[in-house]
Length: 73
Image (cartoon, rainbow, N blue to C red):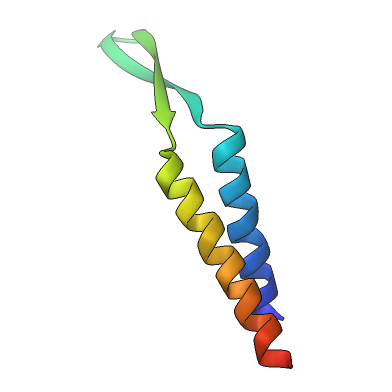
């Protein structure tokens, strides 16, 4: 039962890695503070998911799925 969840998560993450190859996060940093006054800056950072990583995760999920099917028969 637990292996099914892992397999589904791996396959889902592999497909998601191909569908959304890059995503952006925003971080707020304190630049300066004087007393109660704070100066903040917001920075955007883009993260890229390598296609090889997404493909590897997808292949591992499919192999585990195949191993589970072969084990039952």
